[in-house]
Image 1 (cartoon, rainbow, N blue to C red):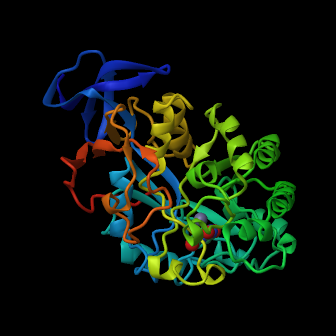
Image 2: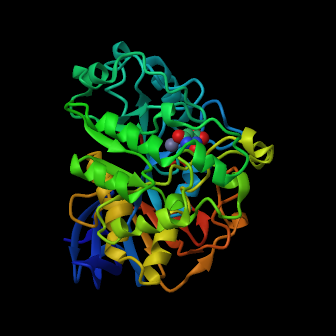
Amino acid sequence: MAHEIVVKTKILQSGTERAMCIGIDNGKINAVEKYLDGERELHFEDYLALPGGVDIHTHMREPGMTQKEDFYTGTKAAAFGGTTTILDMPNTIPSVKNELALRDKLDIIKNKANVDFGLFGQLSDIDNISGMTNLAIGFKLYMSETTGASGTIKTPLEHLLNSDALAGKVVTVHAEDPRMFADDTCDNLHRHNLIRNMKAEFMALRRILAVDAPVKLNLAHLTTAESIDQVKAKRASFEITPHHLLLHDASKIDAMGKVNPPLRKKAISERLFKTLKTGRAIIASDHAPHTLEEKSVDFKDAPSGLPGVETRLPLMLALANKGIIRYIHVQDMCCTLPAELFGLKKGKIETGYDADLAFYDANNMVKIEAENLHSKCGWTPFEGHHAIFPKGVMLRGQMIIRGGELAIEKSGKFLK
Ligand code: DOR
Ligand code: ZN
C-alpha cells in the first residue's frame, strides 16, 4: 500500500542516526521503515528529523497583553524553532481562573495558532476547578506572586489539590516561597537572585512535595541540582529552562535577564548540566516576552520574564553538536517526555503518533540574532549564542515551515 506521504530522512533509533522512510496517512505516522512507497515523496535525506518539539510552558499573552506577544506571533516563533505544540499559561488578562475566562480565551485565540496548543487553568478557588477540567490540559499553581500572577490561593493547599476534579491531572507548580524573599533593592541581576533566593525555592518545594494528593505534580523551572534531587525523590516531574542553564546572574544582559525564579550563579547553573546528561528532564522555555520598552525602565521596575520558545530546541541542538549532551536526549527532553506527561500522541517518530516533524542540518550552527527571530517582542537574551534551527517543519503531515517561510498559517489545533 502506498502511503499518502513518504518522508525520506534520517532519524534517531536507539540513539543512532539511521536513514529511514516515514509513511504518513491522515496526518499520522503510519509506518517507519527502510523502504516505503508514497503517493508523494518528501526528500530530506541529508537532514536529521526530530519529532516536533513540545513546549509545555509558554506565555503567549493573549488576551490582554498583545503588545508583548499574541497567539499568532508566539506560535509562529514556536514553529520556526521546530516546536509544533505549545501549552499556554493562565496569567493572561483576565487570568484564567474559571470556566468563563477559559472559554472566552479559547474563543479569542482558537483560529490564530500556527502550531497545536493546549491551555492551562489557574488554581485559585476550589469551586472553580471542575468547570475548567473539560477544556484545560493542565493546571497552574503559583505559590508566590510573580509578573502577571497574584499567587493568591483561596483554599488551603492540601484541600485544593485533593479536589476530585483534579485527580490524575497535571498541576504545574511555580515554587517560590515569598516568606523567604529578602527585603532589598532589586537593582541588578545579582541582587534579584539574592532577593528571590534559592532558599525560597527549596522551602516552597518542601511544602508542595509534602502534600499528599492524587495529582501529577510537575515542578516548573527548577534552578538548582538540589531542587532536582528533592523533586526526584518524590517521583514528581520537573522542568529546566534554557535560560537557567545558559545564563547567570553575571550575564551582561541587565533587565533582559530578569526572570522569576531568578538566574543563579554560574557555578549553580553549571551543575544543572549533570541532569541534562541523563536526559531525564523536561526542557521548557517559560517563554515570557515583554516589550523592550517595558524592559528598559529602571531595573527594579522592569517586569520579570524573557522570550525563549523559538530558541529552546535550537540551543539544545547546538549543545549536542558540541558533544555536551546527546542528540537522543535532546529529543527526549524537548519532545518525548513533555508529550508523555500530558498524554499527547506526539513527540515520537513512531506509528500512531502525529506526523509532527522538524528537519535539521546538524552541522549548520548559527549565532542567534534577534532580527532573525519571530516573537513580537523583538529581542532575545541569547543574542550570539550558538543554535541549530530547522530547515523545514511539519505539523500533522503538512509542511508549515518551508523555504524559510511560514508556508501554512493558523493550522494549529486545540488540544484538550
Ligand atoms: O519571570 C516570570 N515571568 N516568571 C513568571 O512566573 C511569570 C512570567 C511572566 O508571565 O512574565
Ligand atoms: Zn511561566
